[in-house]
Length: 442
Ligand SMILES: [Zn+2]
Image 1: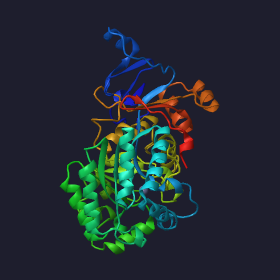
Image 2 (image 1 turned 30 degrees about the vertical axis):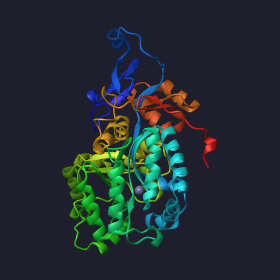
Image 3 (image 1 turned 90 degrees about the vertical axis):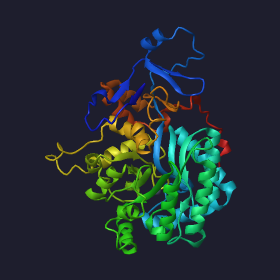
Image 4 (image 1 turned 120 degrees about the vertical axis):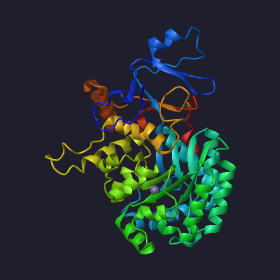
């Protein structure tokens, strides 16, 4: 069993930042919360009564369920679409795909497929974009409620610079978002709402004001959008908002930078923008597979680390190329490596250690989303969302694990080589998720 208890920073040996039990026992309550955790010897000495059920996962890693801090479920079908950068990619692929979500039956079909894909990759919580259609989010929430998954989602707000059939208005965006919040947010299942303007290019000032109103009107709602991903996008922002001093300040001018505000990408942010995020307790979702795929750029992990911002990982499906947060960790490591300017400087450069990578996918993400009191680690009292990972899932992994000595070495080799094949079991609120028959899917 392995989990982080605090930010491990960038030291390869982060001392007390994690707990690891080579031979451990995780005890769950009948209502699915974690009751206890520790070494097998310690736990057995504490409990005299016979447990209801013992499940043996010897030789496996039991870790908290992964948290994906940014992705678009309506883009599941267009993953791996060739040849464009952000603005053209949206036009050629994303907008076309999103039009189909006006049909609730279609949205339900893709929701089912989407959650199956998240879970089989070990992701138990996600922050999710719907489309502009209210029914797209209803379909998403209904499916998450059935699965009892803790998710955060929202209806896209978009009233300009997109195809006509995908536009709402400041008024309809406000009313429909409010309706979803009042029905779902902290009310049904384990569902939270995120006010979701796509990005400042597709929302008028009036609509950003409506987003501001929603974000401040309801307790604990999220704000979920994109910032500073691509140079053409940044240029367009300058034209649209000439009086704002930076891209992030466009959002800040509308009161949208604060706790529970999650901004995807932030590749080209200045130091002042990173400092503003830290000061306001807002977070960035670092989406390496998407940033590489769309050629958007390399996220400045070192600067984010220095600014002390809340940081999480996002798959950014469908511009991202994998649902697996293990693959996302591996690509994040490479993005950080690519920014080492020369060997002489590399000593000063930050590296993404395996401990930090697992932190970003679990407890760090929970902190970024302000739900670390519920999920993100295996502490007693938290919800029983955890996964079982097999370090010997493939012949190559088995071979590599034989030579890996320390925990750091094993975790690193694992995160570089593993994918969905290594996810042996997934638990939501203490109950094992049973994968549906794949023939049910399109
Ligand atoms: Zn995105």
